[in-house]
Image (cartoon, rainbow over all chains, first blue to last red; front, side):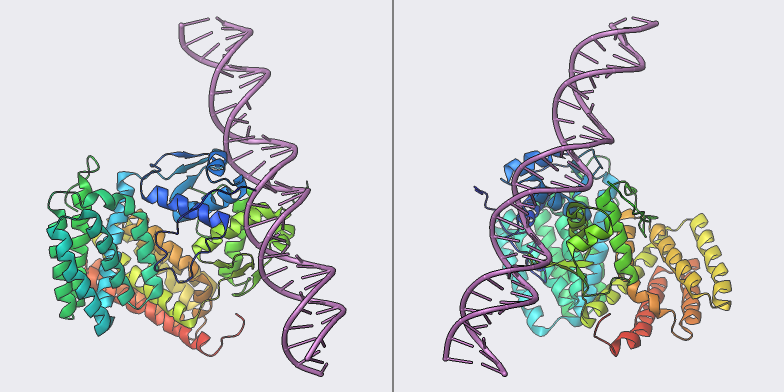
Length: 237
Length: 237
DNA sequence: CAAAATAAATTTGTATACACAGTTGCCTTT
DNA sequence: AAAGGCAACTGTGTATACAAATTTATTTTG
């Protein structure tokens, strides 16, 4: 049996409590597809032919189907019984809803985190934030994007609520493909860091409500910076 | 081939935007297992033998495996590669985390709902709340439990954010087996309705923050009413 | 007699086979 | 020529088959 396919680890493995087993073909395929959908390489609406995928991964349809069914629970793909699977196509309204939910959940996380963060965690978070200045100065968008994810995930962890952190990571992962283009907006990266700064200040002062307000605004700013990406979205939120 | 198994619809189909196809064996099995796990008929830690399940549902292992993989994404079961599937066993800490997250998410929902609920929706919600008095008076625990779910789901819907509502429903579904016993606590059902009353008042006054505070307290009360229940026992179930 | 080693028996993971629903395209009919 | 219908085809859904790994039972050994 020739199996010539080597597949990278999952994107959000960092926060998962139990690591995925990379050995299972179904899991490899699921991780690979998750990545391709989140990155946009597999665009919304793309048909996912089981045999095609099986061939592509050098496997049979069985593990492909198992992977697809898992992705359908995550919401990344849509299964139409006996009519095939497609990458989930979201309406602008659904995307808006997701961004709003993310904003609220992140606000909720940072509020709790403000009250529970340990000195060590706060120190590390501040360190990360300080270093991000360099990335902004040299307009390193990819670098800042990577930092941004780590920054937000550090806040999730500071809630000291593993379940909440997992929820936040999952939603964030699902919005990845939209966030991608958002930072390329002219000076968005600069304002993003300024907003982070305000959040850090509120955390330092132990004002969870203020941190939450700032985080909510931060997320909604990011969303509306993306607004140009879709046509005809209402700009107020 | 004989297929003598008739399986009921999913428990939370009411809020799903697209209805599941009951025709697919994998889906039937998934729904049935979801129900059995949520209801506690399949206790935490129970081993889910693929062949056993296949026999029980009069199917082959293929649709059983597909169902199990979906359940693993929902978090209801745990897949240990090559070592079988078990009903997820949660630590007390994980359960606490889930209850806290639920409390925060419900609070978030009711805050948004307060600002967005339509007069019609508010009227219907109030109607439901009024009628729940009868259930309390005659100590109809099952009836109140059913009402309670509808009450909370009505609030989710009043957020006018489909994604957020879906998140809330999913978490609620996952905690179902724990909520079950909670209402049997002496006068919990009475206090529950009193707390609903406070929430309704805050909504009526358009005070979202107050509604959120009351909802958070309401959920945490319910959790701690349950806390006594499982603090003493850890082995099976 | 206990513990390690080994063999048998389950059980999982994947591949293949097959039936049938859904789609496509050609042909008939008006 | 457009609409409808029929046939062939494609692709999904499920069953069965087989290989590899884990668990259980048995035997061997100190």
